[in-house]
Image 1 (spheres, rainbow, N blue to C red):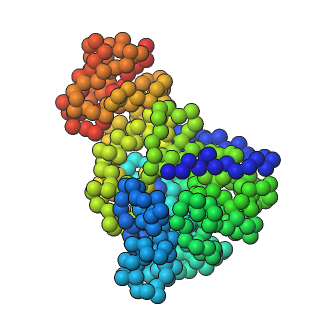
Image 2 (cartoon, rainbow, N blue to C red):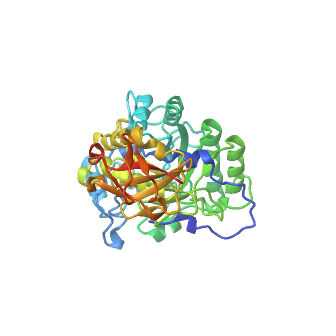
Image 3 (tube, rainbow, N blue to C red):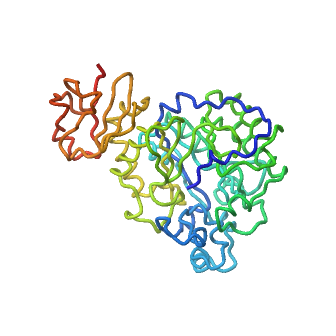
Length: 438
């Protein structure tokens, strides 16, 4: 996957505000991404692990939220199934009037995703299709005036805060197919060439983002792909001015790295791993399955279960990262059981082991074999990814400890740098031992 912090654009002499990542974000560790939109109605993409011929990568895109692009590629599997389901004359944008969530219970949706133990929620406000999920004054192509008939972002923001979590927004800054007249994207090169970069579009995007800032005061400003080149200067609608306005409105707000300018907040890594403790704060993001938007073609073979999710999360945190795990609701707003089971499993594990995660910082290294480490208030926590092995071998730096405390069980003696795993923890996805530093 692309690393967007490496696409910084030219230095234009712009003075950017300080976007140092705040402590609340580093402490939070876990957020939930929500990809929900028109694309949730067809809910289709071809599930695969990414190993397809490069020339077919976009025609066979595995992200269901890219449906509005994939369906326009002649000969694509997406196009064929779309015609079979909806008819030859039905466009993707026609589906906006068919998407009717009905009696949406936003509080129930948010309660469901927060059973994961997450501390912040970031829903899509506008994806690349240009459909706005809030009641924007900038375009009639929005949820309040088309199928849903309501301001979905207002409902999700209110529900998130009522549940005690922080609220953020995802916004597609560089791509908006609704106000563009360009061919479909069919390569990574097209991703950056087939998009509008004019001043008019930059002003349009800035007006939308300003609405989101002023109305919802989001704790996280999660931009995607980049920002239009016409808005990267020192103008009032440029990135620097938008950041200044944002931080004046939300002083402890945080931004990501996908702006295409030589400044950034936290780094993002999408469906990719990193090696060791990272110097800069970063965020791993991925779907529970192979797509962000709900894909009805996916099943257990394509999705993380609770065990896989917990182990992945622990690895990310040990490397100085947060995890923004994605949920793709169905068109009616319900969470598929396959996804809910994984979220519930993570939440149950965190109820016992969350003190070793939330508010933690990385140790001197992330891992030793099957063990990961964090530090909280001077106490090192060792996460054993294979508790069925029956023992935890302490690193040399900690081997002099006389005992450890297994979270959820209690104290256990150390003999020769080895600690037995209690029988009650051996079936757990990850067992955690607190080790006092002498």
